[in-house]
Amino acid sequence: MSSIAYRHADVDGLKVFYREAGASNAPKLLLLHGFPSSSHMFRDLIPKLAQRFHIVAPDLPGFGQTDMPPRDAFAYTFENIAKVIGRFTEVVGLDRFAMYVFDYGAPTGFRLALNHPERITAIISQNGNAYEEGLSEGWNPIRAYWKDPSAANREALRAMLTHETTVWQYTHGVSDTTLVSPDGYSLDEFYMSRPGADEVQLDLFRDYRNNVALYPAFQEYFRTHQPPFLAVWGKNDPFFLPPGAEAFKRDLPNAVVQFLDTGHFALETHAAEIATAISGFLPG
Image (cartoon, rainbow, N blue to C red; front, side, top):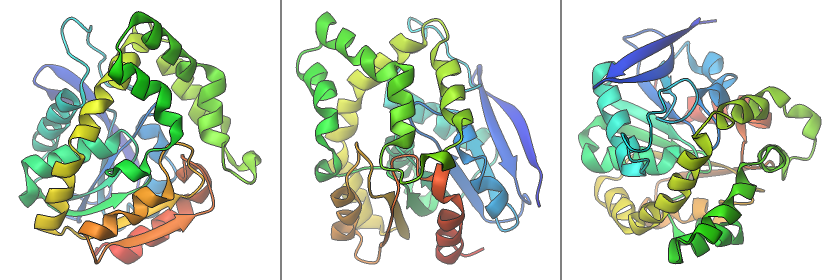
């Protein structure tokens, strides 16, 4: 088993934490986490792939062990997060790489692909959406905030930052919740309880509308560049619906779409199955 190193990179003055495993000369795979997690979500996947790939998994700005600069010094938008992660890939020497994108990692990674399509060798999307039909009614409170960014609508979204909601995100749609380790959601809660972290997350809820606005550009990238694409999807996800996974085949006819009988955080219960799917999909 390849060991995992825990490192920090200086990205233009911002400290980015990342996990790294595998031989440096192996095919490169960038893992991008989602809300409200960190690279810790890949703890079971990395050892299963590290013999074949050089894996790098950063914490996004404002998440995990990566710096969370004050909001008056860093605007928490997905565009800025993508800029940091794009520079991060350059700092750590990822010149050409495949991406595994999940949740918030998807609009981050798809921006990297738009900016530098020549660097992307393949994409694995695990519940990482790029189509309107993939958005469930669970987005309605956030959509209300997009339409009316009032203090009341912002305050209403704090319900999505509670311990109960975080646990629900991990366990909803899972047939046997005893398979879901409490370590993941407990660590997420620890990071979200830091002073100011709630306001960061509310800013990102507001900015997510700009991801949806970019869906046509993401889709044009797919049609134009035809990256090898695997969509592996927890089919019981309350936020990103199976039609969002199936929609990739509209623009990527050769895309592979695989559904798993689990929820949003599919790696919590199906890391082995996802690792097998990736190993069969990516050359290495």
